Length: 472
Ligand code: P71
Image (tube, rainbow, N blue to C red; front, side, top):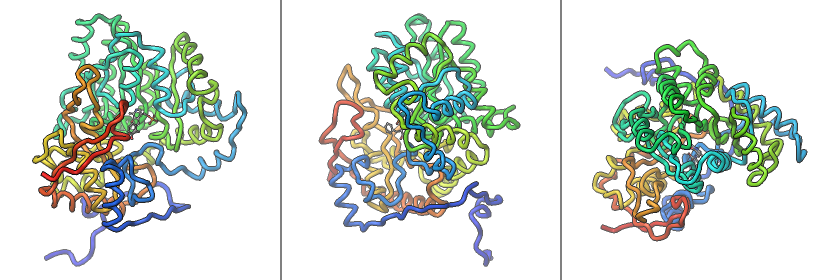
């Protein structure tokens, strides 16, 4: 006999329910659209979700970047902005927060992550040098290439397999790195570009054991490790949860221990650090810092504001302290996991295990009838928008861009559509609506015919490319 009483979500998943460690003080109304309005909007946007107007979007899962809700304390901090050109008190608060929670010696603010990527790439890469890394990220690799470097993927093979349940798919394959060093010589390696919870792999973490082994290898060859710390707090949570020996450590302590094994970090504070704009760059080396502090005034702003208002730096300093709290990060990753568990139960192909910031739909398995040149992940993003007004992001062949040498597309193994969850913004009921819409699109999957590209700009084409629907 079926249970006559409805079950809570927690009970349905066989456990006690958890809840967000905050309550809502201010709300922003959402707008729902009709199917006809969405058909017009996505056609006008060239079937590219980056070109939709936010007003035409119902639940916005384009990105977790700059889309978080700030806390009452952060908003109060905004009122304490010291908008002096030089030496703002908010800069010193930011510097203290980065030193305390990430542990690096020198800190520079930047307008966002790619501002910091630009500076570190310029200062630390010489023409023709290699930058091995645990999978590329679009802006990171572009800045490395613009600085004359060549990115080399040295992530473990499991990262390229959406079905592999390896618990640390962000790990570096040390054999691949060792082979590169042997072949090219350590002096031709600029540094190792290591990212916490690897975005393009599905938000997959790096283990502490892998980092320590990487550190030992790099020390043998005199190679530096710079960390993309954008989602490193989420990575620290996975270490606490999954890696033997770390369960009794706080996320904050794991974060600091991890950073301690690296030589510096760049940060898009729009993610983990819970602000709508901002970034930072931090290093331990005095000489490198000297160079970076000089470059920052050319490209970002004076070294005590780096393109930000004082109030932005204050919100960031407060956001950093909030972001490393265990209760915050558990609820954040718990919400992503909740959506992932629903989709997994419904047999919808997603990258496993569920990562930190997003659910990644596996568009290859979703649309087996579509060749990669028909942009399956872009097609899926468009279909999802048409179904419900939910906005997602392509992370496949369109994002990968073209090989500058041959001019042909890069053909990435992963062809994914990302449902990225902003922090502290949506509720569990929104996640249910998202899951139901994904299921509706999955049920209609056989009708999809794919897209062709009709316009693409030279750099980071996915932002502004336009597509046309294929009929057959
Ligand atoms: C994301 C973004 C924002 C984005 C960037 C490029 C294409 C599409 C969307 C930004 C990152 C990131 C990592 C690991 C550096 C940046 C750049 N991610 N590293 O995922 O994820 O930071 O946007 O502040 O310049 O939607 P920035």
